[in-house]
Image 1 (cartoon, one colour):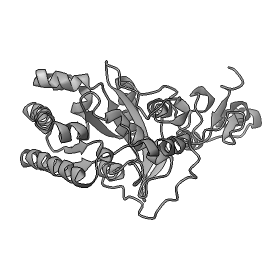
Image 2 (cartoon, one colour):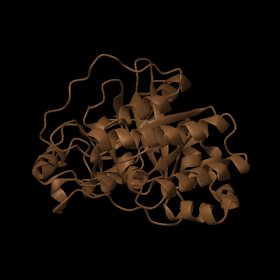
Image 3 (cartoon, one colour):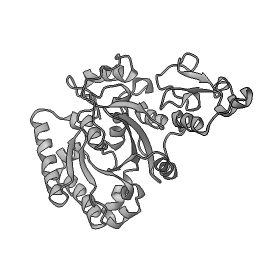
Image 4 (cartoon, one colour):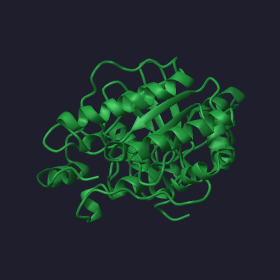
Length: 342
């Protein structure tokens, strides 16, 4: 084992040198949270060296304090299943067509939590920080791009991103299922194909993502697509007593009368769906920073609160944000003069 990989971060959710990404964006030679594994001794080692009897309960207590960190960018279906057996989580399935804003929405959920920009919830770690960081990279100044962008989801089996948040009572885990938008196009051609999407059948919450730009400029097509996906879920008995969230994206691209029109169309769509499925909630969100006003991630905190287990009460005391020194802030300020970019 190399010297760098022989160190581990004691901060929950950070993979340390093994992940290649420091949670606090330090270099690994400067990070104060790294510990040398050679300096740690498990109870069995202590007992062997000191002839002191260590009870089974002490070993169990230590095991509960250890945090298992995934060095990979995301969890596979098998990894997610193992995670659920080990500690449980709220599984969230995203149903979104190509370029509807799904990956940007996921990345902004993480970015808001990591930067302590949520007023009612707090970041409590992640086993897939590398996956989130990869999805956030193109939105940051350090990417070298001319405008904010988001990594596109590749085809194949779904991947799961893990986000751990804390309310007033106890932390809770979210597993966010990330699947390429082309699979939603497949549902439009063959409604029964939704049965092959394992994350949909397992999800605690279903998020039907509607491209706000399409809903504004091509309302008939956007409404038709959303309604057909909803009908596929209904016809294949995949709704049941589960919550369905209509999530309209790209709110930050509109203002004034245009925004009012977008919200009316979103409400009409949600009213149509809720007649057939009362457990339907509407969220009109904007992941990017609005030009000249507003903050990052409009409406996303309300969505995260809706995904939290009911036993978890959000924290209503405001949480001070981190100093605005991150590259993401610099990139946002850099582009304010040129307009909001998708």
